[in-house]
Every structure is written in structure tokens, then in C-alpha cells.
Image (cartoon, rainbow, N blue to C red; front, side, top):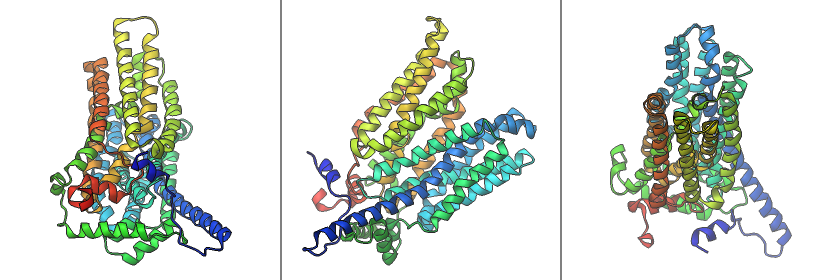
Amino acid sequence: MDLEDQEAQKPLLVTAPGRIGDGSHLAESDAASSSSSIAVVVASTAVAVAGSFEFGISVGYSSPSQSGIMRDLSLSLAEYSVFGSILTIGAMLGAVVSGTVADRVGRRSAMAISDLLCIFGYLLITFSQNFWWLDIGRFSIGCGIGLLSYVVPVYISEITPKNLRGGFATVNQFMICCGASLAYVLGTFITWRTLAIIGVAPCLLQLVGLLVTPESPRWLARFGHPGAFEAALQKLRGKGTDISDEATGIKDFTEKLQQLPKSKMLDLFQKDYIRAVTVGVGLMVLQQFGGVNAICFYASEIFVSAGFSSGNTGMLAMVAVQIPMTGLGVILMDKAGRRPLLMVSAAGTCLGCLLVGLSFLAKEHHWGKDLNLVLALAGILIFGGSFSLGMGGIPWVIMSEIFPINMKGAAGSLVTLVSWLGSWIVSYAFNFLLVWNSYGTFFIFASICGLTVVFVEQLVPETKGRTLEEIQASMNSSLASPSDI
């Protein structure tokens, strides 16, 4: 049995010593402490992923709202295209400042700022009378979710015990998936203004929850709040839990960080951090250029192009596959580990893209009746399920784990910006690529997904069952202790 498996089997929490002769009382105290700790971590994660749910609703809003908005406000297709795409522009701006904002005001306040931006945006959309109100509102929402896409996984990774961190962090992707699915389903029954009002609800819930949610202990330790740091860590681990070892580890690691020069964006490309940057940025590039946004944004169009009479059936089937597969990824994250799930997920997306490419090739060369339909449906369902299993959420989990807190702001901004920029490039270029060569486009995506398997196998570390300090010291030479060298 290797060290990681041994660590994973250790008790989740260590309780403070009690009286030797009172075994039953001690057992009851241990159980109550553990239950209290898990309750606080679960509640804090639930508050954080309300932002993920908001993210999903925002991404899914434009598709079912298109016909109603264009009709009611007399918008041209070009004007609506600006409305749809400006979300990504706002998200890139939010990504650029996400690390700085989260470092300066804290993780909780950063989520609150995101909520206010999203509420402002949805209110503008709800009461809009022309496309200017729509675009400003959509841009504001984009800034909000750009900030949320960084701070939510970082906050979750910093508050959860190492044995549960992966699964809890992956709930972020699960809630994004649920939010997008809800927006798509509700949008077929209610008006676009009502759907915009519904988009405000997760923001309000998160704002209320943030009033009682503890701040990240690691952020408090890093930015000089020692008393609040220990109080927050004790609250997250339970009143009767002995936090001395964990608190000492965080303090010692923070003291090492304090001795380093003040970090800048260019410092990310020094040899001390280049491996972490390569892993974080590389996973985001491969995630986006593997074709996920092409398939998600244009799934309905792909089904029609492949020969289906309507794209609705395929879209609903894709939603039905994505949610349970994301849930399966949450369950397996801290059991199977990050690397195996990533490689299986990337291999599945490679197969899915290959099948979709073959469906267009079959249609072009008339290879048997209905063969292209079967290949297109199977390919998109395999891609959607495989992506949801690992490639959707794990890159964000790893991004939140591998960067030390002194570099996390700059690194997080860079990685999040790369993700949104990649999303915009693929979304913008996909229609042109489809016209150029439909099956060739998906063969390119399949090749990139295949390359992802090799990248993960060669470069991505396994972070299951390790503390953030252990992961970051192993990835960054300047933070390694003498025993690690």
C-alpha cells in the first residue's frame, strides 16, 4: 500500500484527548465533534456552490431566451449575437482581477462582490427596453461569473479536509451543470424576463449564507489575522477537534511564504513555479481546445447538421447524461484519484469527438442509412458524459491545489483568463471550422483530447490525500523542506 492510500485511510479528524476511564463519553464526544465539523464544511461548501449554480444559469440563459428577446425587443440576429457573446468578454475581465480581488478583500467578500454584479446585471435584463440595457446587464453578469469561476474552487479547497477536498471541490462543476440544465428547461416554459428574475435567487441565497460562513483559514493566516485564523479553522473542524497539527503546518508554510520576495505576475514563469503554471495553464488549454464549448453551445445545431429533424431530443439526452456522470465524478474523486479520472475522461472525450467526426464523414459519403445519426448521438453523449466525469471539474480542482497562496492570486487570474479566452476562441471559430471541414474539425478535437491523456500521464501530479502545503511544496522548489529534497 503506498503512502497516499495510507494517508487516505487515516481518520478524517483528530479529537482532543479526553479522560481515559470514560470511553463511552469520549466516543460520543468524538462522534458529535466529527458530525459538527462535517456540517460546517458542508454548509460552507453549499453557500459557495450557490455561486456555481448562478454560473450555470448565466451560461445557459441565452439559448432558451433567444426567440423571446429578439421578438420583444425587435433585435437583429447580429444584435443578439453580441448579447450572447459579451458574457465571455465580461468573464475575461472578471478573470483578470479575480486573484487580486480575492487576495485583497478575502474569499467571502469576493463572492459577495460577484453576487452584486450578477444581481445588477439580471435586474438590467429584467427591466430592459433596448439592447443597450441587455448588453450592459450581460456584461456585468460576465464579470461576476468570471470572478466566481476562480474564487469558488479556491475557497472550497482551502476549507475542506484533505480526505474530502477533491469530492467537495468537484461539486462546483456539478452545480454549474445543474444550473445550466435548469435554465434550459425553465426557458422552454417561462418568459425571458421571469427567467432573469430567477437568476437573482442564487445570488441572494449566497449573500445571506456568507453572513455566517467562516473565511478561509489559509487566507486569514497569509494576510495577518492569527486569532481569526485559529477560530475559523476550529469552527470548520469542530469544537472538540485537535487542530494543533494542521494549524502548525499552515503557519509554518505561511512563514516560508513570508520570507519570499513579494510576488508579481512575471514571477510565475521562474523555475520555482514553472511546473505548477505548466500544469494549471496546460489543463485549461486542453480542456477548452478539446471542443467542449463547441459541442455544448452548438449541440442542437450539430444534431440538425448530422441529419436529425430537431436538436431538442439530443439536447435533453445530453443533459440527462451529464448530471449523473458529474455526480459519479464527485463520488470517485477522493477514491480513484485525480489522474485516473482525468485520463479516463480525456480518453472518453477523444472517442466522442472521433464518433461525431465519423458521423459527418458518413453523411458526406452516404455510408448507409441512419449511420450518421447513430454516430452523432453516441458521440455527443459519450463526449458529454466523459467530460462531466473528469475534464469538466478536475482542472479547476487542481488549479486550486497546486499554487501556493502567495502566488495564488496571480496564478489564478492567469489560469482563469486562459480558460475564458480559450472558450471565446473556440466558440467564435467553431462555425467557420464547421464550414471549412465538418469531420476534420472533430478529428482535430479528438487529437487534442488524445494529447490530454499523454499530458496528464507525464506532468499532472496526484493530489489525492495530501494537504495543500504538501502538494505546493512538491511542485515548487523554493518551498520544499530539506527532507523533501
